[in-house]
Image (tube, rainbow, N blue to C red):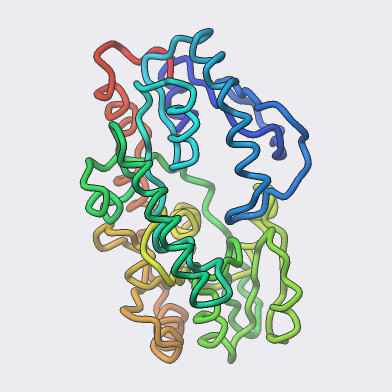
Length: 327
């Protein structure tokens, strides 16, 4: 999003946590960090550390808004929406990334905890709804009863896969949280070699599934390496919500994909994807075999047509009464 704005000459800024690695590529937008330590528990999912850091962003957001005076201010997710509200920045537009009511219970380890977690998720969804908002997928737009925001996705160079491999390799790329549905894929892919590219802790995974090889996923070089070693990328998803990042990343590189319908997030008929209509591991295995025998094509063109930077910039411009020279 920032690259798309900067490419069209807009002065784009990002405020985020003090922690997090920075890549070494040049950028045409400005990064601002929150206060506090660069270390801490910043794994995917809820944590007390994230709550503390969210609260620490309130003063920084207020200061930056006064300094930059943006034409459009976008708060990504319920946490960022709460930060802007506490900072008194009522003009911020919340961009919904997920359904917390369905995602939060996946972190609970008991039924009673899951019910409580869903309640917290509903509160977070309500925070997102309080004020102007957009959603990044058709499914989320229907849930939040708002307009979708067309999201840009860059096209990476097509992957050149080796032709000398003796047996097929299935790839999962992403975190290992329960809502991702990785367990469905692992049962479906027992006859295959499975590569899991992740920054999550994989110890349990390695103990239970001897056909799994774990790979890193923190840099672009890691992603290229992961996709070069696979024949098909699989995107299961146990709960609705979220943006199909893994699917678009694979399709933009012209890698064949198997995904369940839920993982498509309401986007219609993606080319380059074999759809598995349910969470049955046997049906997913059949979809994988179909993709291996008849690799689906056209995903790269589908991404180019449906996730352009120009469409995103036009949508952002429409959110402001003035020309969005700053975002």
